[in-house]
Length: 399
Image (cartoon, rainbow, N blue to C red; front, side, top):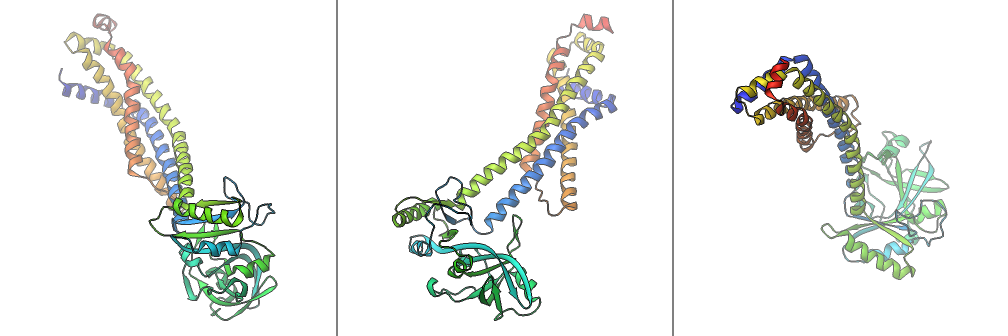
């Protein structure tokens, strides 16, 4: 028997029992669709989160007070660690491969201006913040490079805060009261959007020394350093570590590079994507069991046909390939249907919920179809071997 004849017989067998074949490949299709849908959502979230972090650049290094393995002491909570200071930040500016350094003092306060009051997040920074975090000023200017000890009471507003307080009016030159201190508006930041649910436009930036006075702080919450592009972050982090140890006498701080953070975050998100994909894979296993069941029934129903083929001289290898071909055909068709369903559902969900990121890489599509074929091949082995081992005399007798 020619291989083409075996393929023709396999195709006829699949189309002879159309309802049964459809239900069988539907099991595979549901499994593949579940895998594609879940991994598309997982990969979309993966790319979204990494994109949120990389919008500030990939060469940012952060130093926080307290020696921990995860990221320093929480902002605003009491700590026995020696705080980082404005002087520490200034000392880091002179290190090689350091582009810009800004201290960071954070806190919430009421902002009063133009007859309106709003509680918002206040950042105490210096003139280098736009260079460190790739921010731009929409109107006016950012904080000037004043000496910390004599920093003028200037404030730069986020785009949303400016709109909330002044609407369409020009806020430049206006006076504000933040907490118990008075400030003059000298600039408005360009809209930045949200970062993991935090509205970056609902903020105000004041000099770090003024923020320390406002929140009654001795030190700073963290120091942010921008390294030169193309220079390994680990090299710059090592120099920062040596400088701070020399100033503090011990390693009572934590240094986090954005490169390390992104790598760790990417690994976590990869595991989560694989986990949700594995949940969809359970449906694939169920589909594989369905193929085993259907092919076993097919062998029992076609015992006489198998005996006749062997009696006519068909090699047992051809019988084996005949049933394997049926199983692979069912799984491959089910895989293609599942790909269409999964991709369509993913796009439909993204259309209905634009805020939910969805991305379906081509590698996932090819892998899913390959897995479907492999499952069909594996599920068809036992029934195919049983068919190939049938005694032709006994098979014809049962007919």
